[in-house]
Image 1: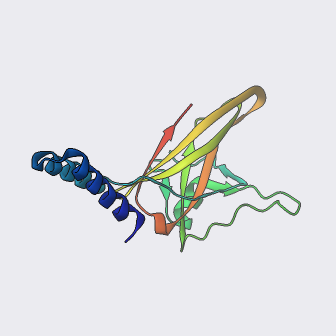
Image 2 (image 1 turned 60 degrees about the vertical axis):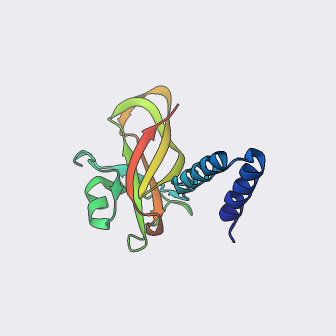
Image 3 (image 1 turned 90 degrees about the horizontal axis):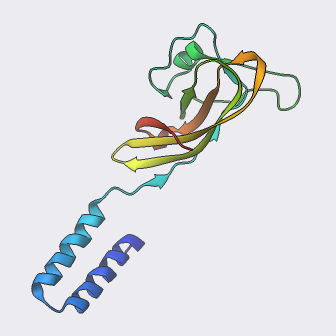
Amino acid sequence: MNNRSFLVAVALVLGLAACGGKQASETTTTESMESHEAPMKKEVSFTVAEKYFMKNDAPSLTNPKIETAEEFAKYFGSATVMGEDGKPTAIDFQTQYVIAVTKPATNMATELKPVSLVDEGEGDLTLSYKVEEGEAQSHSIKPIMIVIVSKSADGEVSVKEVD
């Protein structure tokens, strides 16, 4: 018996013992079954992709979920620099997909940082992120955030900015 089933069984026994009446025990059983059927939210692991930029001629991102290298290449370029850690984070589109968040060009130093990726149940994933804005710069940037997710955590993706 798994932990969840055990907890439901304990709740039923305690509910029956506490209530003592048939009507109350039926209510407890119904409530326990309803809570058992509710989808469980769970955290999904991801990796933040580094050393990519939004192409100047890229179309607007209509869906945050990108599943192929060809589609990814329409929007993003790699920003390889010299040194040991100069290569962009590798993405294997055979086993992974990305969730991308972009913001309009700005002259403010702006970082998009992931907060969480949650499986809401029933095939829905929500990526929460925060925006950290700094000082004005002499040049413009297009803030982006790309997270890499295993295809084992597949589903409809939505993104949500949080404070």
